[in-house]
Image 1 (cartoon, one colour):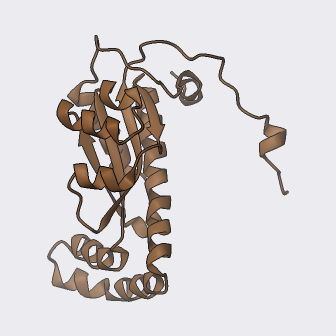
Image 2 (cartoon, rainbow, N blue to C red):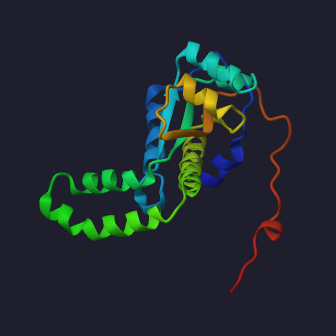
Image 3 (spheres, rainbow, N blue to C red):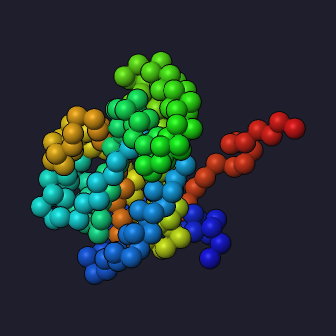
Length: 205
C-alpha cells in the first residue's frame, strides 16, 4: 500500500487489544527502521529500551499518569537521549575504523572537527541536540509501524526520573519519548485532521 495511505491509516491508539500481539519479526523491522534513521553526524546519540515484561510495564504505567496503552502494548519502546555526545565521537570513529589503523588515521580529522563542534555546546545544548535526533528515530519507527499495519502511540506524558530509575538507566541517558506498539482495540474517535497545505507550507521559488 502507498506510503501516504499508511500515514493516513495510522492514529495514536489509546487502547490495544489483548487478542493479538506484534510478532518478533515485525518488531525487528521497526527496530531496524530506528537503527537506519538519519542522525546528526550519523552518531545516533540515543539508546532505546524495548520493554515487554509485564511487571516493568506496570511500573512504567504508574510513572505515566496511568495511561493504559503503556501496559496494554505488545512492546513499549523508551527512547533515551545520550548526554555524552563528545565521548560518542570516539565510539563512532572507532566503529567506523573497525580496527584498521590506516582507516583510523584517515578519520582523525573527522574526529577533531566533530569533537570541536560538540565541545562548544553546553551540557543542556548537548541534551537538546541528542533529543532532536531521538525524534527523527521516533518518526521512522512510526512510519515503519504504519507500513506494517501495527498501531502505535508516541508518548511524552511520563516522569523521566521515574523511568530512568525503573529501567536502571546509567547517568549518561535521559528518557525523552516513548512509543507503544500493538493492535488497536478500537478505531479513532474522529476522522483524521491535518491543516491545509496553504496553512503549513510557503514555497519560495
